[in-house]
Amino acid sequence: DSSEGRSVDRSRRGAFSELAQAALPLSDAQLLLTNAAGRRRCPGMQLAAAAAALSKAGDHLGAADLLFELRDFGVERDVLERRIDFSEAAGRCEEASLLLGQELQSAGQLRAAWTAILAACAEPQLQDRRRALELLADVSLQLSDRYLNEPSKQVEVLEAALDAELVVKGLSSDRREELEINLALSLQGAGRSEESSRLLGKLVLGSRNQRRRQQAEWAMMVHKVDVSGEVSESARALRELMEANRPPDSLRLGAAGASARAASGSAGRQGVGGLGIPGLQFGGLDWPAALGIVLLLALPLAIP
Image 1 (cartoon, rainbow, N blue to C red):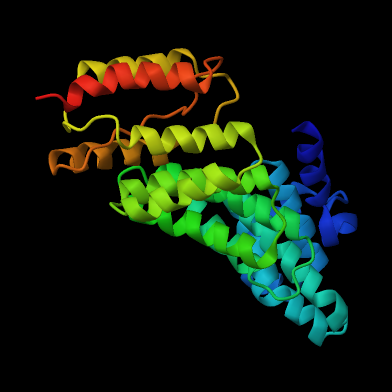
Image 2: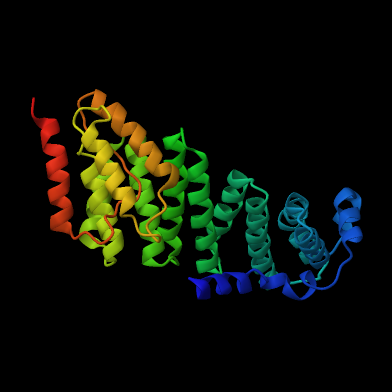
């Protein structure tokens, strides 16, 4: 959604907008980065301005280094030296944490970014709830993709994002359900099939979004398609059919879907069938027609 993207871009300016966007020579910012004693004497706004200059130049790790200093020490020094009062300090710490998370995300340090943004979401006086939760959701989904072969870690990061949403409340229902479907597939990948089925069942019954509801229905069904544990011709045909009919805007299941597929194969070899398939949509096919296709493909698998 372009309007949502513009809103997030505007919110990045936050509490440090005036000075952080002022002209600061890159050479000065780089000097400050290498001068620990100098950083300790800097006002918080100057640290923010230096971080902005480094970020603009593409040095996201350098920007993150200065934002760490700002969040952990700079705001407190500003209060002690009476540059700001306590009423401003909380907002500046929050802004520093969120900017830090964004810089770490841009640098590819997703676990550190997730930790920084999660810490901001845990603050009792969180002001920009929607922005913080959107950032946490985005980083959590990216980090889940990194944990392709570690579904328990996928579950950890996705559950934390949903727990934060449960307490703080700021995500759209569509974004929350995207996290829930990816969590359900990660739970399946981690061998927690009952929890996965319960979560998908809740989405099937409770979602007001037809696309998300359909995705949850297919996710529940594909767990049970392949009772043999082998990659059968019918399973391959089902995967090809779903891929051919997947619309461009269908859910990006990424590594969560891959983990679910891996777990389904393992479960099938133990007598608990299932085949996780990304996409979870048959495009223009309506439910009765799609169900008929799946039954035609799946029933022969159950016949000795």
